[in-house]
Length: 118
Image (cartoon, rainbow, N blue to C red; front, side):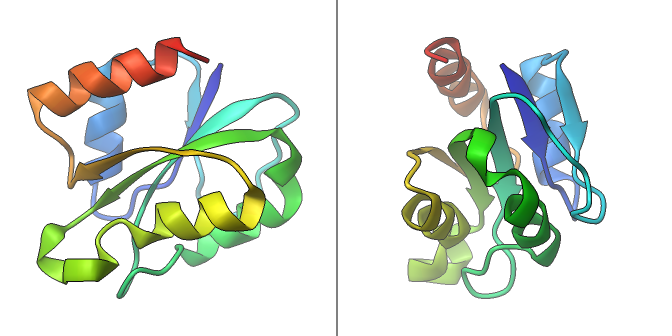
């Protein structure tokens, strides 16, 4: 399955690299088009917000979205990874995993298991 991701600070990009995923591309401005099923990896912006470029991307590509994996910082308390919760609710897809920043080795192993189910 294709992996689509957004990364502002590099945490999600590092996560993608750690997973050794071949079929992926990065959302740059939100105008990209996907014509196949995909999993979305995103970061949480501001205080629990979906990043602007991800919102733009989903406006044109939500029909192929199958799930979301989200990065966040626990220092934001209850806003931690809320972008994933918001996307999950709005597009009726599962939030498959929440990861602190770029994730630990254990996170990488768990995310690999999740991805294999798709």
